[in-house]
Image (cartoon, rainbow, N blue to C red; front, side, top):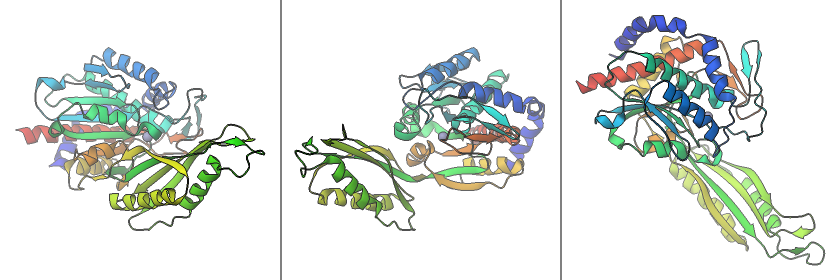
Length: 388
Ligand SMILES: [Zn+2]
């Protein structure tokens, strides 16, 4: 059934495929990449996207207070038909003042955030452009979602706020675009929890009050104990102390210090066991300490027999790729944990994500975007048929 749908779409859309040039894809991507969008500060990029969506005459265009932007082929609230969402996160890990220069070298384009996730957003814009231009009687409302707060401490709040607007049963699928994930299908989310551990002390002068408790001394002892924890291979469980902060001056006894701990596991039991160990370490130190949960991404799983996974696999296969099924920590975690069908798919290959020399490969771009069009179309038609 899905194979047949794909064949139909390929024939019908062949003319469009020729207009889908590498330059067009890069143009849309770099326009996004040039607008700074650190997590919690996505407003400028969101405004640009909102204007584009309005210019395309998408329906029910909305930018919400945390700067998610959504636009539709058909207003979603005029029927109770199932809806299909395509999303890409707009935020980046780079501070606002990061130079966003791009450069091309042979088969690569380099630039901060180019692959994660300007390419995802650029592809979303291109899809919106294509769909807005189709003279078609829409049956299934398709929503284009440019969401904020995926990275770091954003804690998936962007996608959560968007998804919470619609009854869960109505969401037939969410296709999440990640620029550099070509050939991969994330259909399962690993469990992630993030803790901020803060130690406190009275403070004092480094010489006069030597020997009194020092928040930094306590914190680094805690950090040392945590870093000695040995993790099981099954379920795969990991931790990382990614940031340390505290103190006021070199000759003061520190009154406050914090560390940020990221913990991950393929199962929530594995994660809970690790958290228990960490909390035990903190509890047994005789100190004034506080643990705050600053991030929580639940685990979740979509069956590999679900049409969304099957369609994604076949779309990749039709451009000659052997897809791989993956689990990860992405926006899809939120949907998967709520039993809303969702997959993450990619547009090209790339590397050095979250670094200034991040890059994407140019050659696979056209096929990558094409495979995503195939996925969206197949999904729409598959839903249309389920309705009849
Ligand atoms: Zn990303």
